Amino acid sequence: MKEKFYIKYSYLLLILPVFICLLIVKSVIESNFTPERVLYTYLILYLLGILILNKRIKFIYTSIIYVVSIILSYIELCYSLLYHERVTASTIFVLLETNQAESYEYLSEYLNFKIVIGFLLLLIFSFYTLKGVKILIYNYSIKEIFKAIRNDLSKLINNRLTNTIAGFYKKMKQHKIKVLLFKLSLVSITIFIYVNKSHYKQHISFQLFDGYSKYQAESMKFKNAIQKKSQDLNVINNNKKEEETFVLIIGESTTKTHFQLYGYERETTPNLSKIKDELVVFNDVISPHTHTIASLEKMLTLGDYEHPDKKYLGNVIDIISQVGFKTYWISNQIPIGIYETQTTAIAKTASEVYFLNLGGEKEQLSYDEKVLPYVRKVLGSNEKKKFIVVHLLGTHVQYKNRYPKKYNVFSDNPKTDYWSDQAKETINQYDNAVLYNDYVVSEIINEVKKLNKKEVTVLYLSDHGEEVYETLDMAGHSEAISSKPMYLIPFIYWNSDIENVRAYQDYKERKYMADDLIFSITDLLGVSFNGYESTRSIFNKEFSARRRIIKDGKDFDFFY
Image 1 (spheres, helix red, strand yellow):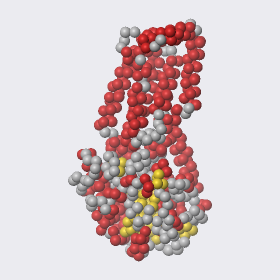
Image 2: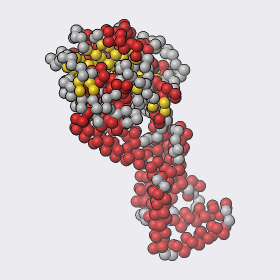
Image 3: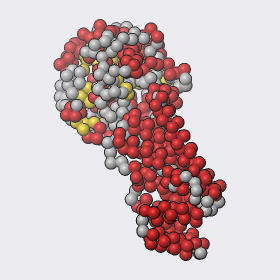
């Protein structure tokens, strides 16, 4: 065979781009991931090609496997570089609960020049490799290919061995049925080893399928629990007040470390700082996770880190509604991902639901001040007992889309150990988003003040924090990376009775994880139920700090 060296061995080169991608993945993640187990998948698929006699169909089949393997491997490579973990079933949960606008923003934020150039270079290399395979498939028989490879092998090893192999192949060639049976046996043995050793579980396609299946089962189970309601909890209202209003404000991706109120050097919370004497600013509160889905399903239900399945027993909206409160949900979050989100399922149990952000390109600039007219409307209604949840977009990536132009205040050089133009721009955008968030939260408190009623409470916290070039050279959040700012969240209490504010000042240094939020809310409202634990309310004198277990069973206070 006179063709260049790479032609005769181009079949082997088909796995090279994938192998390179997977080696990089292994180098950036902390796990027992073995690239060889994923490569085994593609080797089997290529091996199946020997059963296809038609050369055109064989080339089309090989090309499809090749292209799919490269795309999947490059996606996994980019994901691991961004989040320091492989695509898992948890990743699929996040994707299925992410709407189109959020996906666009994430891509806009993280799809950079290096990723695009890397993909183009990979495609160029892959194209010429596939071209070599096409020459091999169309122009040469198996016999000619074998002869060329045998000649190369004979130069490296004993001629007797290569001649024995050649003789075996020649005898097999005389009997087509034997050849076919040999091929089938070879493929069958290879597949058996592959399945028996569970190599397939490390492949991204299995993770996609497994994640989708688990998501479907989880969503169905959760919706059934929502429909069943918390009838077995024996909810009791121990507080017989005739009128009461409670406003729960849930932020998004907001770390307390960028709050002036928590000692940040920039004036990012001027409005809240002006009324700090009216607030209890809890200093040591963390989220249970670094992403929204897992955090909120624990904050808003009876589930916690140690007992996640308790989320099926009841949620805060259902419990509060059973003691005479009319419940409201006002949200600037897009309600629908690829599938209905679990947070949305909880929201829909409220008496009145207002989703103000319907998705689409314009809604990427859906500023949180949208909620203010609806907050006024609900506060002005005639119901004596109201429980109002206000769900903000907060400081969600892309940060520049979270605030109007007049809040583009910070443009100087921020403090960071990870200096670059991108870091400077990103930190400034994030701080501007925090500044605008301060305006929205303080305006909600101002609207509540206008009620001039005695029993009114506002509680503000974020679903999780965010890393913004503070301890790592990155902006965003990831459970695999899990930096300290991703867990540290603002937790702020306001009450119309200043005596209540003063009483809780002694509690502001308590170590608390927000998966116990439901106990704190019900404690403030004087509501008890089967399974209620006063020791898990940050506002209760019987509070007992528990170990704050986060990712992979780590103790937050020991780890950080």
